[in-house]
Length: 403
Image 1 (spheres, one colour):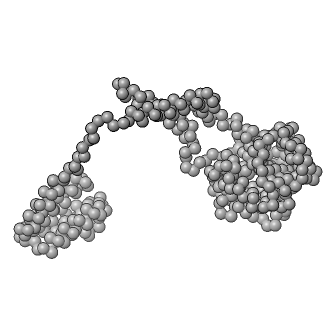
Image 2 (spheres, rainbow, N blue to C red; image 1 turned 30 degrees about the vertical axis):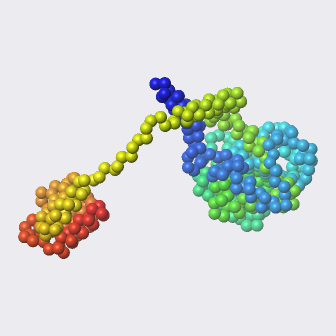
């Protein structure tokens, strides 16, 4: 018991850790990963890794930066500078009044704010004088997102579709005096608009999965991504990928998915003690695994004596030219095989038997009939030639090989 106790402890610990990790990561290990993250580092179908990496090709003369600060803490250069573009891509855009005022001030100074989200805060809807379909009740989600760009202002009307999740909404109310429609849903409802403010613009896009890896990399959909962002001037000096509004609500939504172990591991003291214990148990186990007994001798693989016996008997019949008996032995083995595997009676070898064996084995009826006919022949045949024996043996081998 003393020797096995450490193994019992480490087995329990490893099993517990594995179970906890399995509970936490059960959804993550599905293939493909169906989570809608829209994060720039995620290469899963509904991440935005491809969209973020392609910014440098869409805006080759611009600096690409990432912002994680809330608008209240933006530096003065950020707020008062011109020819900048702020990209906000998130499942939800729940900005409060003070944050919205900062964004509007940023746009008025000659910059562009591009927001792509399925849900908007009521504060944002009130301030922009619009209403989205997701704001008044449950929204039925479905597959196969289809979006199109308006003509004009775009050079030509084009539809873009992919077979993934839809996860979008549309505007059913807006102020036409300040709103320019840039894109629509499959049902011709506006889902992409421009709001002019001061010297800049605010673009509102309600189908964020159109910027996901799955959509962008599906067929010609990269064209949609490039054309949608073409509303931002090519002379833009700085393109800012925003993560503040992404993490503002993502942090809260993920808490329920975390296991109690991951919560405890956030504390430095507990994490250090936990991994020290695991390391000590591992070292102890490795030390106790040293060989403490004599080397186990190598045992030879048992020889198949029955197979040798069968081969010897077969050669005996063949050498004595007793082909009739050899064929009868082969036929007996064949019939026993049919009774055992296909549960067929071999008492009467007639056409009914041939059809039943053909149906159950899948072997051609003609070949089955030839085998059965030869078995009937050797029951009364006084002699069997070498060629007949060889042909019968070949028929048997073909039957066993193909069935």
